[in-house]
Image (cartoon, rainbow, N blue to C red; front, side):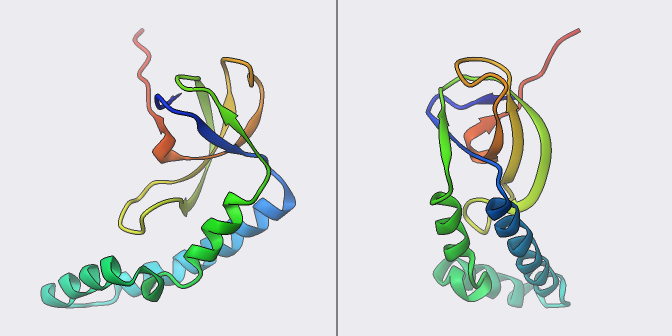
Length: 131
């Protein structure tokens, strides 16, 4: 995988980051249960519209979580750096309608080679290696 054509934020792993991700994973599981509850098509449309208008109602605490993650120590990964996926947190890192999550990566090129940390999938794209 490779970073997009802009700087990507590599959040340094720490007990505080692990705790934030763990607590948010629990919250997101609760939200997932809500979305899986039986509902009509119209109710589903209303839920999505409600989520767009008031995301905090459907994802309480998300704004605080993202703000806390933004305050964690981090380094900037240069554009077009190569990364290796190590772990998927399953915790969303952007718009609640998107499925992008924080992923743990190892930088495999550039000045940060060997560094490990968390990035948002929005900042990377998957590369394909041909045999």
